[in-house]
Image (tube, rainbow, N blue to C red; front, side, top):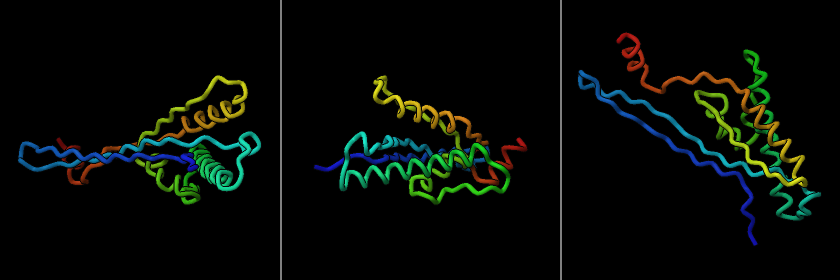
Length: 151
């Protein structure tokens, strides 16, 4: 049997072209990343072995790396290093996390008491992500931005 435990990233890129009164095109672009993170894996709880255990270890490692990036962004000091290259996940999400983007996290948790520790961990993770402060701006040609500024 094959496992489907993994992170999923769905990236959408959008470009908008508008023609001004002079007939000149102005292009703006944006990107939307929809990310479904696999939950952390507790080996002692799941009893996973072999390939499934290794899969869980890799998931946990990428979630840990994402946590390091979130912490670094929240506690950002000028010139401080943000460890985006620690995992493929954080490299792919670099623009969404600390770049020219707004970031939103939806945390899904369950009411079962046997998942209490995972629920608390997820909510703490989401609370840290909520504290990321980015200052996004419109992605457009610099000449178009200058023209828009003087209109």
